[in-house]
Image (cartoon, rainbow, N blue to C red):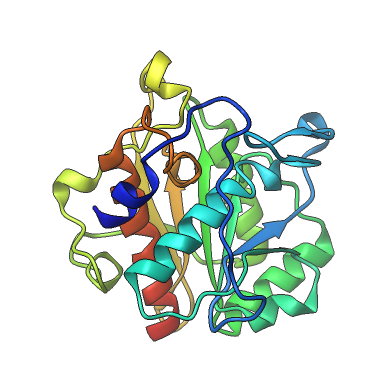
Length: 254
């Protein structure tokens, strides 16, 4: 609960409350947000992606607030030497410098051949990808993600993470009660989208190591982004931190 308590002291859902942290330029670990190509029908122009930041593309949703908040919590709750959060294109060779990367809104991505090849190489060389914030009802966004991953890692099925799997216990114990959807801010007013239920899935490599964490019908990024907003439920921010930190600890120890 510490991270939520530290960050949920002030702020609101309006602009002008972005959290600024003083991270060293270099560290043993960096939050890496990946830049990718959008589907043509969902291309997003230059616009607000968080309370104060503007950017092009769905890759930037919740940036930089989510990245800063989560990095600050990671710094406080672990012994990692956390450096500044960064965003890196999927085609950038610097990708291989980092053990863990994050992609959001992956129901709207449209990876080109170069992005597919680079992500495949990254995962086959031991990297770990966390994806978040894509939704039903219906299969449209899920199908986009699944078809893309079939190109990245052909023959590797998406499977349900079991409560007994090590990623659920590497630092925090994730229990049955924690398999709940984490709301985006829009859901605080509208409720959970009808016909949706959260899924906590994985893709494993040829050695049966988990290399992709798939968070579907849930919005961990918003829980990080609004960790400083008193209107956002602190227990959901706490759960979002636990999932994220477990994924990172798994990525750097397995």
